Image (cartoon, rainbow, N blue to C red):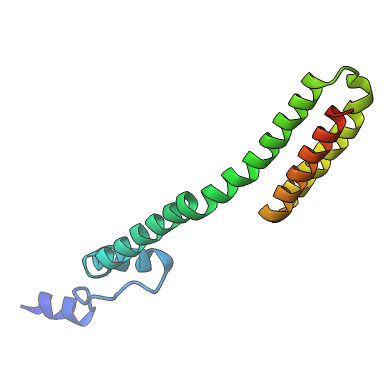
Length: 131
């Protein structure tokens, strides 16, 4: 049996592991996915639920409030425009008030400041209509 001893000396049946590489790391991660997959999956789902809840319950009302105030101001401007006899004389004043309020809302002014501006616009409309 001289043949098998020679092959053993040549190390033809010895296992040499592959050198470290990215593909080897991915293969190890795939093989051990049963150990780490469930906790990582749970964490990803929890983060997704938290992100959706933040968008719906925190960010959503802020955005709705920011868009409702300029709509109310636009309605006040339309009322002013409909109730005046000389719209050309009042349009410049009303548009400047409306653009100021829109700019404040876009720049992130507080809700109280926007409400104050709305009430000042209503007082201006009432004063212009009482002439």
